[in-house]
Image (cartoon, rainbow, N blue to C red; front, side, top):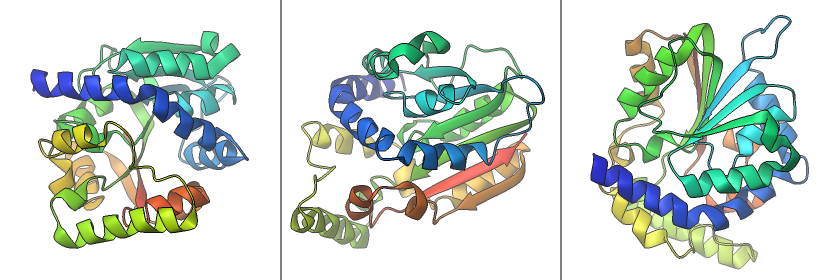
Length: 252
């Protein structure tokens, strides 16, 4: 697993500058408010104090930024130091209010029950041990805390011929619409190679996620498979038509 984690870290460090461009689009034109409203709707009541939120796999810092803007006490972790540099830069004046830490999402160096909420975006598909990660995230949540995970069946097209055809149709539609093809980037082949060694592309999601969370002892486990229709901007909807996003949330 160590060699695979190293490859994943290398990929995201190389990808960090271009991935920042994606985050900037998500922060523009009111989309940050749309995402924030969705996340916060699943958070527990914090009473008179700010909720302690852990953003796992922060990448260029999207979740950390939109939640810090709204007064949450945010800790943001990522395995890639390159991504953390981008996140600090993107946060601007908010960087001093966010705790950025390099850390493996599957092995968190936090005490049990440290956080009121955990948020992740486009992370679990990229983990060698996603079930172990869910177990670890449960450990650092306080009783009554919320886990909110946005993801998609990324790279499922590598293991399914029908999905491959749909994926290629998305590439064609992006060109015809005159928008950026989100899969036409320098490191794309590198990630396809890594994804073939990861388990999630072969699993039925989000059903697998719900089954895993229930088995771990989470309560109120739910999933929304239409959330991408609300959260993705028009360009993303074209690019990811064959890979609908989903939100999974649960309470410890």
